[in-house]
Image (tube, rainbow, N blue to C red; front, side, top):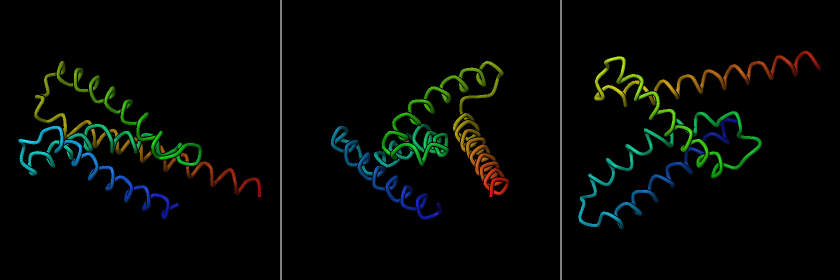
Length: 126
């Protein structure tokens, strides 16, 4: 399992490099530092939380499908959560520091819990 996660993170790095290249082609007047800021922002807001949300699907679906579905779901959750956190009075400056880490933490905890439950069920059977 650790090897699978490691290989997927390497593929995510390749995706980040590809995103930077595509963004550089689109925004050709922008500096490389600006392109990397945009790329990392997109990864932080949508792709990484989406990847973490779909960790529990890793045996059923390929990485590409999980990234697409997870990124869309993450963008929706970040948008809705940002709206309601803004209504509660928390400044928008803090949203990137609160919402994506929260999604990642909850996703990893749920994945670990599911994994522990699966190993307990396997132990009970065998």
